[in-house]
Image (cartoon, rainbow, N blue to C red; front, side, top):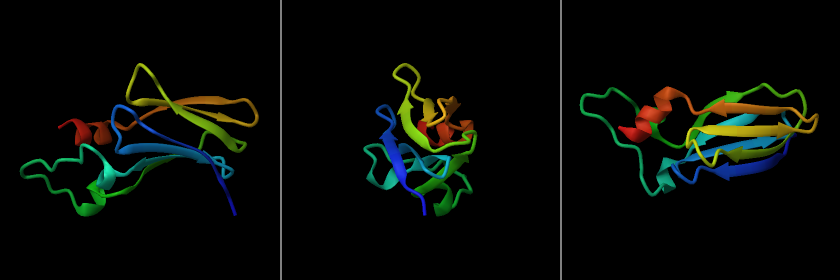
Length: 104
């Protein structure tokens, strides 16, 4: 079994969470059901509830050791960092498709 060591919400877009734990993974999550600005559906958009509902957006597997901490950038709302026990810092970003769902 694995534990979650760190979870942070995005202060600019509160429907986004990032988490890291003992499985060496960094997970990006969408929690639009409790967001102050839920995702909007575009006219003619063929997305399903699974595309816009709560759940995992993407899993990042660049770490070889447990992820000790995660943090969102203070100057770029779409960038986050993770730190693992071996000292590795990895910088990632929210996928463009998810940005468009939030912004449009």
